[in-house]
Amino acid sequence: MSAEPAPPSDAEVAMARFAADQLGRDAAPEFSEFSDSSGRRWLDVLTVRDAPRPGHVSVSTLSMHRWVNVVGSGADRHDERVELVTVLTGVDAGDAAALLVAPAFTAAAEGWPVQAGTVFPGVVGEVLGGGAQHLLLTAPGLFPRLARYRLEPDLAVRWLQAVPIHDVERDFLDARGLEALEERFAAAEIAVADLRRPPVDLA
Image 1 (tube, rainbow, N blue to C red):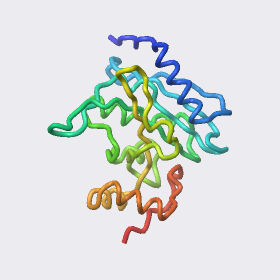
Image 2: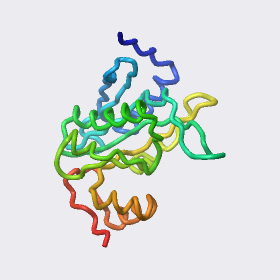
Image 3: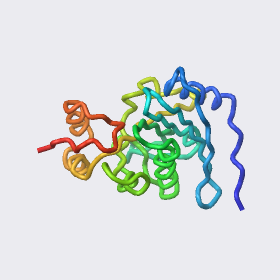
Image 4: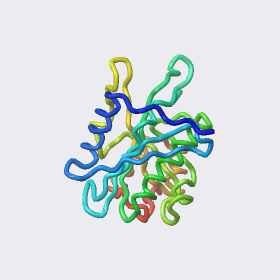
């Protein structure tokens, strides 16, 4: 039997408004609610069409921060609450939302640490097909004000931007690390919203 999600607190409503303003200041936000296959875990999602520009869709989770997210190791092991955000072009809004919802539920169910550098293998190909196949989490470069949000006096929330990447880019990430890959992306000025962009030449 499914359990209804707890209603958002005043602080969570304020955070949702803040996120909507960052994704599309002049656009009308849409809010959706998803549940996992067990019906025990729920996720609120914000979608803004034609933002940050026409033909694009921006999507953010809003209640993922309610889930424990243990990252780090040893003395640095800690619980870091996160939300996910992405921007895509040429993609239906519902499909764009699904691209965040699927890995979010997978991470929660399997206890994946969700942090910059995390890759969800094959999820882009499974949900959207064609082009880049994997989903990489990075700092929210398109939305710098979402880097850290103080939800409560003792609770900060960090957004991570989900970027589709190709096989060769994932291999480079595994071999050289996130910073090196981001430097190559910056030098190539990749269109992070375009699923069908060519892979970066990493030779």
